Amino acid sequence: MTTPTTESSDTAEKSSQSRNARRAARLAESAGVGWKLMLFKVVMLGLIDALALYAIFVLIQSGQWLPASIVFVVTAFANWVYFSRGNLPAKYLIPGLIFLFVFQIFAAGYTGYIAFTNYGTGHNSDKDSAVNALMLSAQERVPDSPAYDLTVVEQLGQFSFLVTAPDGDVFIGGDERPLQPTDDAEIDGGTAVSLPGYNTLGFAQIVQNQQAIADMVVPISDDPNDGALRTPDGSMAYVYVSNLVYDEAADTMTDSRTGVVYSDIGTGAFTADDGTELKPGWQINVGVDNFVRAFSEQSIRGPFLSVLVWTFVFAFLSVFTCFALGLFLAIVFNDPKMKSKKYYRVLMILPYAFPGFLSALVWAGMMNQEFGFLNVVLFGGAEIPWLTDEWLAKISILLVNLWLGFPYMFLICTGALQAIPDDVQEAARVDGASAWQVFRSIKLPLLFVAVAPLLISSFAFNFNNFSLIYMLTGGGPRDAGASVNVGATDILITLVYKVAFVGSNADYGLASAFSIIIFILVATISVIAFRRTKALEELN
Image (cartoon, rainbow, N blue to C red):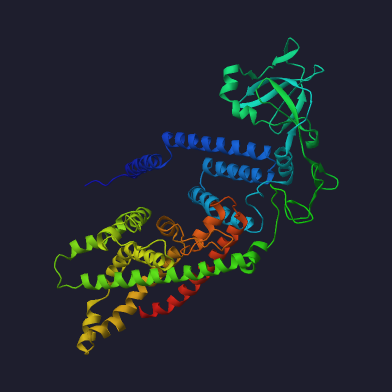
């Protein structure tokens, strides 16, 4: 009998180690980043870097250095993370953090910032833009003013005036770009007809863009009091001077026709002694004035408080009615004696399967006072004002929301009831408890343990249930006595939307203040409610 030598043992061990090393290399290669994935990463980061670079140039041109710096730092950090080895957690976190910042933190922060400004219709720019807009809005052609020979030119889709003054000097300028002298123009018959780098518009092109060219206002100089050039036909330009005279030193705007002086008194608009304001104004910081207006100005406070009360009533009744009906149906269809329960359950959740806004539009048509299905078919042609009477409109909203919301409550209650152990219920029945006592003392408390957080989230959802209100009633019927656009069925979120976007006077500052108030209310109620639900956890 022979025994293996030391040499053969070493050889076998080395061979085994070599096989293990090759297997580990293959596993590492298969788990590593392949060239296809690397190419995809390079292409995607290249697109993102190009977009970021474009955003940086745009921000720098508009003078916003801080946002440009932030975009540069974030982009550089993302490139370092994705092109470096390791940093695996950061590679997964960066996209989520960016989206969280853009769509949540920035949106909330910007809303808070706007709430402390007068931003809105007539106050949506800076002071220099407001001065220029005022000067342009009051312009009139100067009688017997010299005419300038005009050639309309275009560069990168932007029109410019190439004008020849009566003394032969050539200038070029455009909207908000004062005239600048140029020596490179081609002269034909004493008139500048083209300029290197620009395309000269022919007659057909001028006719095609006639309105845009006629609306152009080209300042003669940086001083708005010097007037501007405008053209009625695209061939000759004339001097227009504003009836308003701006005194930058005194910070006043004087109407040359009436002699009325408008001063900057810190309200974001030039204001006369009698309180008359020139519009547009400019955006300024107003502190807490928007919040003060919401609670102190009677024409706003009254509608706001009524909307606030209705919002709480609507949210509470929506949750209560949907939960009550959903729980009732869940108990009925959870009875083991009932046959074909699965088919009934499918029918119960059908309203939940359709989009809510589409269902609201269908119900709005069915509740039409003259042609709706309810009035024509069910009530024999009666003209019941379901959506135009204040109280009927509120009842209609609650009924439609019940139709849309009970399937959700039915589903969660069914699941919660089926999770309750049968032996607990059997023990209670053996002890002589009635069906009502079993439900009240056992089923309902255990049910609340599961559904209480969902009831809180449902309350928060209905507190901001914009689509139902807006699609069904539009917030109407309208309150004619309110200074803001508000109706009897408006809740806070639809009020915010109307103040911000509906009507000729949008007040983004006031709407943002309302949004902050909504956030505080919902957050406070949610925190209190979640703390109260901790008591239910002891039942587990």
